[in-house]
Image 1 (tube, rainbow over the protein chains, first blue to last red):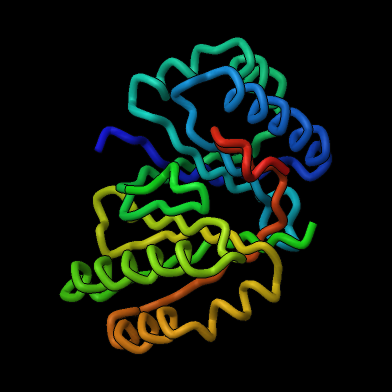
Image 2 (spheres, chains in turn red, yellow):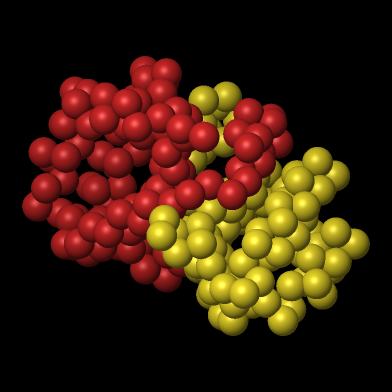
Length: 107
Length: 107
């Protein structure tokens, strides 16, 4: 299947954690609303460590992911958060089964 | 919000990886279909390491999660995979924003 699913692990400068979370939320809302190829973006922090962020990302295919990287809302997010991100690790994955209540991600 | 979202990181005995993935898939399909409080279960393996599994889990609340642990399909999965799982790490999270194309996980 062409679907791209990954997990991003970010460590944010604790002094900027609140600002980072707000900017990430804006980017997620815009991406899912505006881009047909963005299936889901789930952002969370590790309990007890609000500066440790996990984002589970789902795109229809590699082309959709690459197009996402060029959108104004993503580029704005990257520019505005550049000094806040201490580390970023992208875990590429092979989907096994993604099931949700609405059935949309079956497969 | 009462919603419970976590990431499970599992290392499976490579000799049993195929069997494990099949049993996990059965459990996921049953859980999402049968349990109102199971919002999503997304299983994937780390690219290049098919025995390294990540499951992103979403439950309506703590009670839904605890009820899930007592279901026949979950108990069957745990029993049948007990000897396959080399390690399990549960990362509890605080949701920041979960957005998906259908809008169901907004928030």
